[in-house]
Image (cartoon, rainbow, N blue to C red):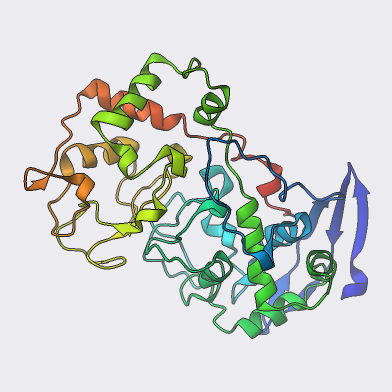
Length: 361
């Protein structure tokens, strides 16, 4: 099959194409799509990070980001052969236009079963300390393989089978060689390439980011947005858990209980504690919470305003007067808070070609 691949130069792009199919591990044919990549790889390794995002890069010494490594990771991220029956890719549950989240509360796995938690958004993972709703702190290289092996999500429980499947696809010879100096495919390299791509997925161009870079006292914000930032920082104390200096997350605090329930069907990391997610691109990542119970930002704001349950493990920042605190926000303050949250959307990130699907349907 590898002799059937041909290269076409057009509009400064190289297209990798193959006809027919490749036999998968389960003897199910994998229909190969045309792959289109730039002749010169996109820049992932040297993306300029604004100084207001003052966080440590979590890239390990043995897996620093390279443009070719992240390019391989991008292809693998969109590759449906990563699933047992060639139907699900990482991107199936993490859509770029939605901030790499999913529009449904739960996602459909490779055999049609539904996941048990909402797909988290992806952005700036190179600065995160924990991942997934249970706030796992294992290296990103290990984290990215977990959904691939999950019996509901992608079903490739045997990593040696995954390596064999990917190795059988012709266009990966060149991609692995450029990324790692060898055409050999291993699950370790797959994890490293995916991790490089996720670390290369940098979102720093929201209206808020631009205001921080300009350092002009939010001159381009509307009065409503300015009022919302004031509510966020002070009366609502959102910054206690969603610190702007930590990319609107608080990984250092680990998992926490935000009073969604008194009794949890899903206990998360224990006692109803879940990871504090970043609010970056939050306006496009609905539904919200680990189970996708809230469809709108208004519902989320209402929860924190007057819906927090006095769970015994409730986060200290949400406690008051011996129980759960009420914010008692006015309607105007709620509207202002939402307006500020809307300034965290990075429109460029949602359409950036570097992070888009490289396959042509």
